[in-house]
Length: 489
Image (cartoon, rainbow, N blue to C red; front, side, top):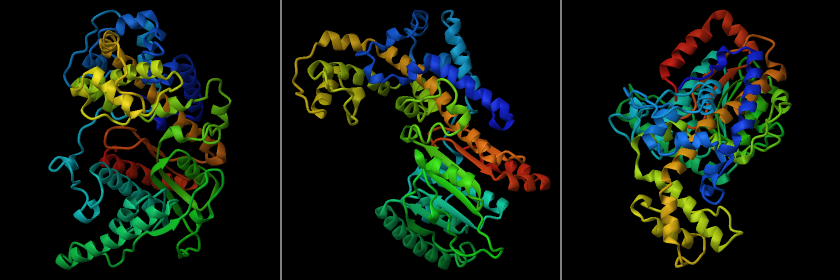
């Protein structure tokens, strides 16, 4: 998918990009701000311009993927069945042009081609208790952190929000890094320590079987700490070295695989304020959990822009993988009707209990095999209403007939989602530059955000002093080449 490369933008161009993003979202953010389950109760289709309705009405899912989202099947010739309004075409082009570069398509990573449940890049002991998607993630981020650590002379990696410690174990026992793991949940820390011992025992057995291949003598388990990291203040524990380095000063690399909400902001603040933190590799996610204000906007530039505000719904929408949904559209599976069924259920709930809005409905199994009235009855039971309420079948069937409209509106909303994510991440970059980190040449790398095999966007950055030093030696270029060989997450 085409887009903007952050490395190719000057400081002023980044500022202008933020201006353009807020302008577009001010005009069309209402589409992403809507709840698709209120499609019928709020008559969302009527909120679109009439010319857009005419262009999108009747398009089937594969056509939406090809024409609206710009993701046709390989070899497909894209043909419009009618002349689209210039405003819709302009929005489509703008959504592509203003978003940070994303993965153009996705396939199952090569490491899973032989066995979809096991990454060939991780040995069996490191795969245990880890789902395939996370196997891929910890290997990718771990390898990146190792290269960054070597480049910066890092003495210690700090894995913030480490959970059960899967990434920390791979970095310490798999890659030989000195790792401190910080997690606020005591139960998860105890689980991580148990898994550490289990992995050590497995590696010892493997070393005895094949001592020439497996050598763990110089490696140690992560050092786990129970600590809640407050995004508003600096965390002393995070900055404490495990031991004094030979040079007399710690050089810390901060990372976090699923740095949800404010946690990713806490990493940025430590990076910008603490001289001992020399590098950052962050994978932020769960933007809807950001404190607003407080964690967004961070930069003075974005905060001063009209229309910079992002509602909970906009930030939640930014977490969706546009590419993954486009593939679902191309397959045109029956599971796409779930949005329509849930929106129809909402009309029945509002009629029976007007004050009950958007109640949570757990996944109803095998939706595609149910008639719409059967789905509604099960949904009513889940929210505590009488499943035998009288239903207007003609009304439900009329809703079901608009299934493609529901999918079209949701697709249009997802077209805007990358713009929101771009604005959030651009705001973080501008914040770092405002913190006097732009006085020397910078080294900044961006990896495309989403796909079914990766959590939200990954970026890494070196402190400018390190960047200036390594630019002289030419190492960033070679590092970037080696990172490119890893291919984006």
